[in-house]
Image (cartoon, rainbow, N blue to C red; front, side):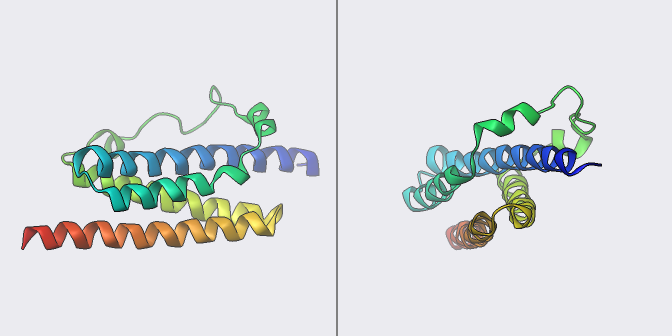
Length: 140
């Protein structure tokens, strides 16, 4: 693979994971906003989502290849959620994993953005802990 082909593939990888990260955060944000009416966690998630903006580059859209994505079909476990809690767990995992992929990918391109995604990943870990600790406290 040429350097240009590698660069295009990395751009595609970044585009997919930026979308996945933003979508995962939005699902958790909206659950906290509309289901739990939790202003604090909603705000923290919104701030994390807005931190992603510097990484967006419309030029990457040319490398988006939805038609030829070898993994675009959902697997059975992705189609089954039995509770709001399952949605939250799945989307925290999705967002954290995407943040890690972006942190590693940007090491090839821009160390500042790599550090940004490390910060976002750790921010997600903190919000996840707060979310589940609050929900556990409500049970008692």
